[in-house]
Image (cartoon, rainbow, N blue to C red; front, side):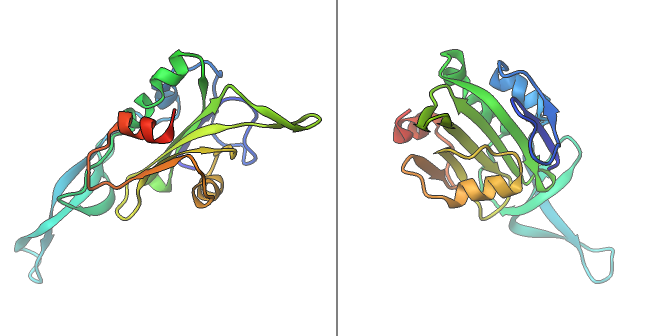
Length: 193
């Protein structure tokens, strides 16, 4: 875990910043330390003489602008989704009182970012056995991974729980390739939320 904020119980690993459960998505973005952007930059390299500079056509470095961390190498057609756009996805749900921001964080030096909202409609399976439902937004800043928005019963607090949630099949999930622009309204319609 690079950075993280959480509402509710302390995660099993004890990491992150505890926040109240009534934060707006924008406030959760700030508390989770995710208020940074990614940008594509042209890629260059030195030749064998260590003086000649060459351009790598068709490839770009994906950079975290807050500290110039290189997150990955991507192609020109790769479209980054900014963290703020991922968190804005939750605005209507939180404002209407249907969900509350629950956890958010950054893994692998910013290469994997997630936001998780708790749905305010749990159900009881057996006596006192409550099943919570969450809306997960996984926003990878790395080549070869898709944006993934899904309903899950798993409280994501680390790489293990994120991986588990993304590996489980869900009848309410949408994956969006970075080769096209992210359309929040289409994703909401497809999810049926």
